[in-house]
Length: 150
Image 1 (cartoon, rainbow, N blue to C red):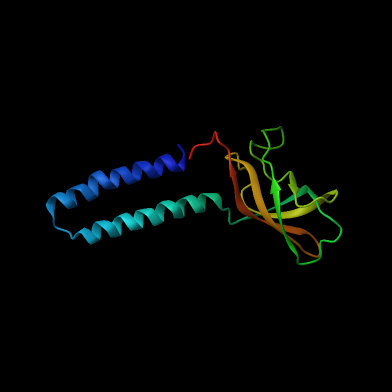
Image 2: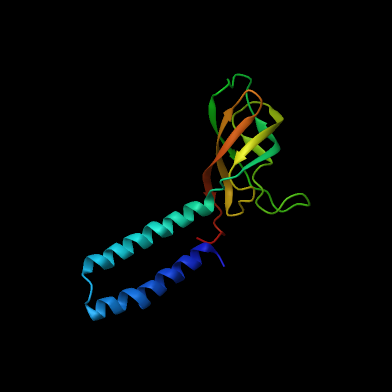
């Protein structure tokens, strides 16, 4: 079951089992119902953001396009296209190739901050920083697959 379907079920349950009886009994002021609805909205969007973010780093040998003039400490916005399932990776593997600019391709060690599998996206956006010994890329969201659930 996707997280979004679960959230909708929780909101419907809270509305019919908690808010409706409160309104019928008129024991609470209308501001408390608005407060509960506000908290639900914050929780819903918070859970969706947590689902997108992976607090763990992943080191991967990946191919990246980079021009020679990318200086130490400089950041660039890059994109990757999640792959179909292979023998090596699950569907949506997003670390295989990162396109940062028009430079040549290089196979390098990259530390990714984000989920390895992102099948709900057709494109994943990264903010990559060149360090002295490697690159570090942080997940910036992406372009959703039109077939994925909302």
